[in-house]
Length: 190
Image (tube, rainbow, N blue to C red; front, top):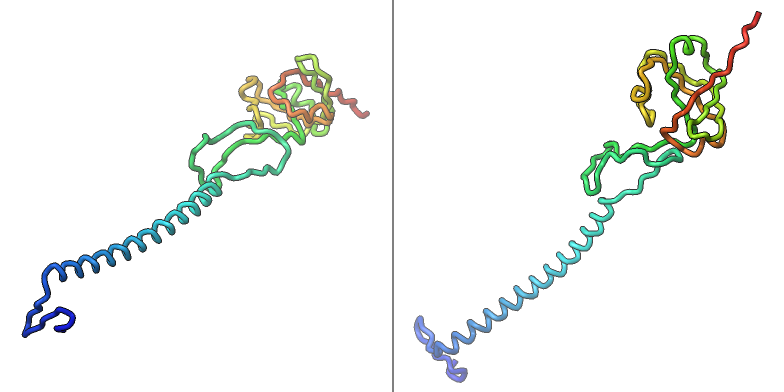
């Protein structure tokens, strides 16, 4: 101890206080360097976590939607940036694979019609005649909720006839065309 410059006695140390302070500062510097290394490691780990979460957020914030039918978007039921839940309706799609026409008719016309009767749609815009077949007679009942345009908005007649179109011209997925439906006359059997 004498060779090293330390003088020891009973319960005291005879080293100069500046040497003691130097050792304290070296120890404190070592502690701070260890804290800095730990903080740098934590920052690197958190930066990686941020990148992972940004990728995860991007994956969860967008989704490709595949419709079971060929068609076009009729109505958007959400807004950009809106949070949506599983099972929530997002949009309405028009099924363009088989077009139908809903005709509002008088009671006397309705009573003459049968499923399978032939009909022709004459567009008011002067387009080609489109032929079809009567597939539904709803009478005074409400129109199906899955039609693009609710027939109630078009006429006050309570009798409705749905005609499935057969021609390729019907596949153009035009909605809201107006015109006249002409039903084929029945021949009465003797």
